Image 1 (cartoon, helix red, strand yellow):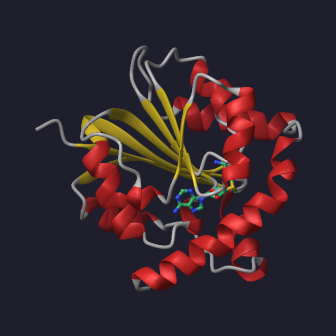
Image 2 (tube, protein in one colour):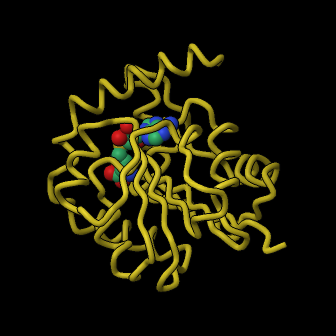
Length: 203
Ligand SMILES: C[S@@+](CC[C@H](N)C(=O)[O-])C[C@H]1O[C@@H](n2cnc3c(N)ncnc32)[C@H](O)[C@@H]1O
């Protein structure tokens, strides 16, 4: 996709998620909450570390992220309506309405980056990863996850009005993330859960 196509794709998504933001405000079932807990536990957040939640939606990960007493939490989303909800529910979170490939936080300012339930929605994945690596500190962790798993996402690939991609296979995760200098340290693929954790070299 060229820049114009990415902008069009993002505009469609923004519009779609602005319309359905309230669907993300319902209380999650117990089993989904348990899987979200596992996702947030995966990168082993240390107290004081800075966390960026990409495609945060209405902030579904925030209650679990807060438990780790992070230093600073950043949230990035294309949808202004989603971010309005984050502002009301989690006012301490620093919000940015942007495509993750354009998010302009300072270099090396975050320790952990979550992309939960949204990786397939990113139009320019190489651009997104390049920018995430710039903002990530050495030793920082990137988490790609989905609390409903691979088959659920395949359903979205067929039904959404904008193109969504499948979750990465182990080979794709290793080769794609590896090309950005990230080492995959966890790849969990269960019927209703995907968690990939990749670490940036400390050098
Ligand atoms: C399924 S929703 C919410 C997912 C949320 N993380 C959760 O766990 O409930 C996906 C969100 O990703 C956002 N999104 C999609 N592509 C994005 C991108 N390139 N940069 C930032 N946000 C993006 C959409 O606007 C949408 O709010």
